[in-house]
Length: 127
Image (cartoon, rainbow, N blue to C red; front, side):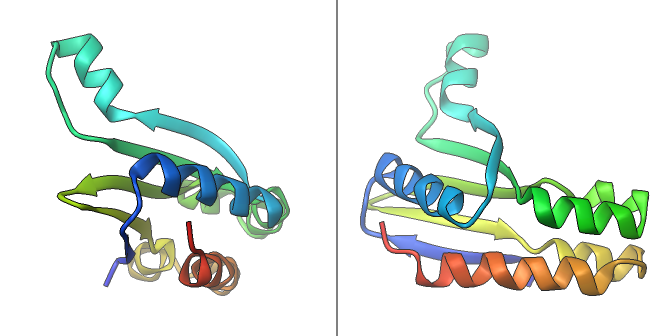
């Protein structure tokens, strides 16, 4: 599957706050925090549920991956979506290695190395 999914019985805000805290503890930087609900409300006056897109990057990983091949920049930053679905909040991480595996071989091992690190953080993350 091209993404890792987790489900929580906490609000999207709680999940996001805790996730961002844990990511920062592991050296990740939030490059973009896109509030889809807010954007759709402002642009279209459309009420949409809680839905956030995080673009995150580990600067150490980015340096190593980019030094291997500049084209690897197409695979960073990593995307995580967090949204409320009924009474639960879902978190999905795009598995960049799945995309890289299909289109690009150089740097695949490095991408997988850092993806595994991020997946472990998410596997054991509890909001």
